[in-house]
Image (cartoon, rainbow, N blue to C red):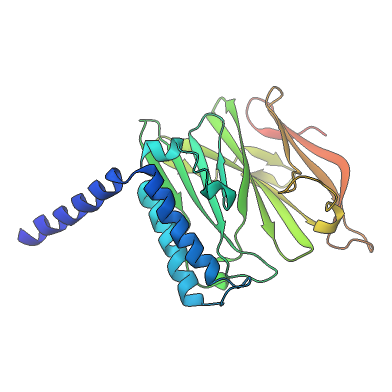
Length: 264
């Protein structure tokens, strides 16, 4: 009985501490971990993998803890946003925090934590398990856009994430997400392709075929809310660009009342 009471007291103390921390202090805490991560980085740092693992875990744990607060979901994190990809849906119910784990080389690895508002109004978080080995989890992608549309299945979010395979090789992934009651459904199969139903579509390309785009990150996926449609470029692989040349032609998927289907 004493052990149970002691454990309850610890959980209550941690919860109270997380609830009492100001937004500015939360941002300062996250920036402190991020600065330590950058100092240990493979990219101009000391390449200290133990420190990188520790700080990535600390960042992930802090976001999972503080992310259960509604005011954190509403906060813009002005200082952190200069260093991270913090992407929020227009209805303010879904957010993704993505950062470079600093453990990669020409292939970058990103970690993402999701924050969302459930049907009951609670704020929750979700993240893939983090392991120090990139081989154990693969190189992650960072979220750069979240679009949304109303469907007969409720609100569907379309997340656009980008990965960096090397200096010249990149790719983007369009993934459907849905807040299902109190959970985040990361695999709603609402996209119909020739291969069947899926929750995501991706394409790869040679970065130097889009290097002239002025915006960073490079924007290649577009969403038309009025038509409930998204489009992404046709990529051609040939001898000149074996990794894929981005063209000015597009593939378009539109919601037909049940699914997103290819219309052009």
